[in-house]
Length: 154
Ligand code: SME
Image 1 (tube, rainbow, N blue to C red):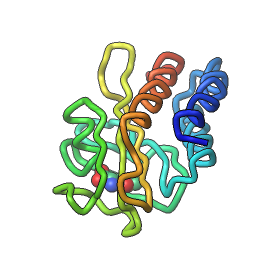
Image 2 (tube, rainbow, N blue to C red):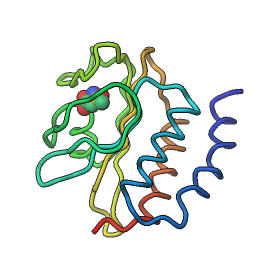
Image 3 (cartoon, rainbow, N blue to C red):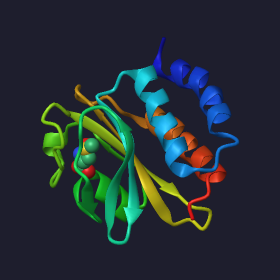
Image 4 (tube, helix red, strand yellow):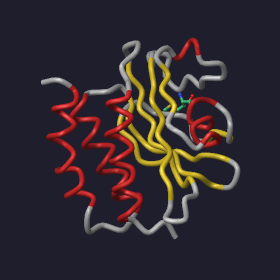
C-alpha cells in the first residue's frame, strides 16, 4: 500500500480515537502508539512546551532526552519557526540532537492550542534516510490539528 493510502485509511480511525477525550497526555499517548504501530517508525512521540524548553511527553520507541531548549535540535527549531521541519539526513542538520545514533531522518510538526500558541511538537524518527515528505507533513498536520481541537491544554 502506498503511503498516502495508508494515511487515508488511518486518518478516520485516528480522528474517531481522538474525539471525545480531553486529556492531552492520554490522547498523545494513543496517537503515538497508533502511528508507531501503523508505520513501524523508529521513534514516534511528543515533546510538550514548558517555559523556554520542550519536555519529553508520551512516545513509542527507545528512551529519549528529557529536555530540549527552544531553537535547539530539530524539535526546538520546529517550535521556534512555528512550522513543520523535514530532515532527510539528520547528519546534515546543524545542531541535530541524537537521542539515538540509529536515527537517520526526521519530521517534527508543531501543535497549537486554540489561541495559536505552540504547546507541543510531534517528533518522528526513522532509521532510513529521506523517509518523510510533504505527504507525511500533510497528514500529520491534520492529525495534530484534530488533537488540538479536542483536548484541553490547561
Ligand atoms: N532528534 C531530536 C531530538 C529528539 S529525539 O529524536 C527523540 C532533535 O534534534 O530535536
